[in-house]
Amino acid sequence: MHTSNRFHPVYGCVLILVSVMYVNVEAKCPAGLKNKTYRRDLSRICPACIEVSWLIRPPFTFQNGNYTSGILPALLDLMLTKCCGNHTPSCWQVTYHPPVKNPEQLLRLSRDSHVIYPVIVDKQEAVSLDHNLISLIPPSSIGFVVPRGKRESFPKKLLMSVFEAWPVLILTILLSILAGVLLWVLDTWFNEEQFPRNFFRGSWEGFWWAFVSMTTVGYGDRAPISLLGRTFAVCWILIGICICSIFTATLTTSLTTISLDTKKSLPGSKVGVIKRSIEMALAMQQQADIKLYNSVEEMSVALDNGVIEGVLLDNYQISHYTETLFPDSKFKTDEIIKVESLSYGAVVNDTYLRKCFRRLIAEDKYLLYDFTRNELTKTLKGGGDDEAVQNSQSIFDPTGDLFYPSLYTCIALVVIIFLVGVVTELFCFRTGRCKLSKKGGNHSDAIPLSKVKGDTALDQLEKEMLGEVQALFNKYRDRLEEVKNQENNGNAMSMHSTV
Image (cartoon, rainbow, N blue to C red; front, side, top):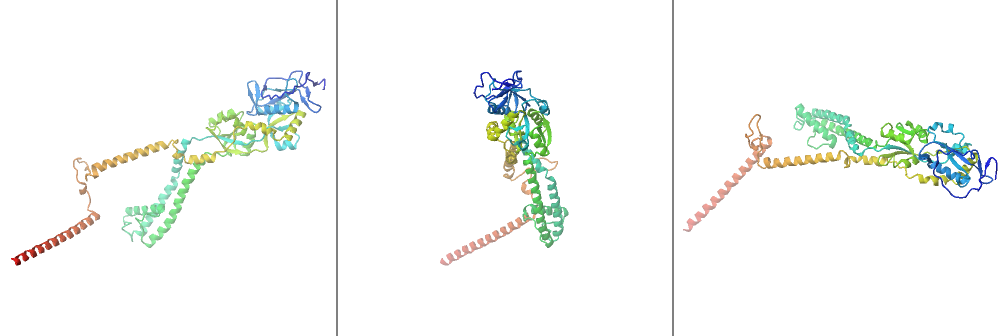
């Protein structure tokens, strides 16, 4: 064992497995241990008092009362136990300096510390170059966390998207009017019965034909008979198919845009990130509108106030805050981005500790993964596509703000129409009389409904048919009377001859 400037424990280090999760924040290295070392064996020399400078960044490092906790302190204790032996005050101890509030000052103010974390480590550069940086936290995916939209607002957005297609509807009606007038001009001289010579009546019939031909290829109640009229009809039907397709495509695009509008895109969005974090580097690469914050709590407040549209958090942070700041009921992950090269680690200034940490990681590549996998309590999953389908169907969802008002309105209209029909049937149609009041007259001046009818062509035809039936009936009756008279005369003559 060594003397003088080497720390030699009196009773030796007891081999007891101890896992330390919390260490005193305010502790200082005792005067007798500062700058001393502990030799575990001939090749392993550890500092007797390991000084750590750190920055608060949950869940990697955070303050729990007067103690430091998190993934990195626990990992450091694991690595020190493997490199320096079991942790006892007589062998070595870890002393944490007060946390640095400004991440930009962490490395500048903590040069004399044995370990400094958390810092961003580029895994490729750390392997190729002789740096003091060691990657301790395995890389994880980064999620773009945004607030969930209120589902009850989507039916209203869907209806508004339909109303926003009014320019195409107006253009469709105007083209139908022009086509109707043109057909009236071409066919009125050959088909005056269906397209009258009167401009207003004929144009209206032409508009009706043009609109129904465009949407349903016509009902057959109006049809051109001239050569020019039918030629134009063929052209208009083809044009109408295109117009209907454009109108349908416009509505479909509007509805699809509203449904997919819930999934925000990272480029161009106002995104909150932590200063000097991996998320900050990723946001710059994705061309996002970056807003810097000192803590996740500050980002949560800004997100609630609408200052930013979303936040970038890695999987460790999402797992840590999913029950407090970002519950699944209020927030969702719109986009997941994998980051392979960057990770969180530590600056290890002690030569032996740095070599030992790297050797442990090289010998057991799953050492860090096995330790940190318990911290990932939530699996990231983007929910943009499934939510878009749900939103497109939300107009029929009972939780929407338009479902029940629309339902109650339709039921009320059906009941009103039914009652009006029943009253009209009982008091008007069944009695054959309707109360019609003259202008400025008395309501008692009632006339039969039959007298109100005009002498139309249909009425005249009905009268002619009734006259023919009556004439046929009278002829048949006269013929029957003649036959009866002949039979009576024959019977009387036969009786006379007998006598």
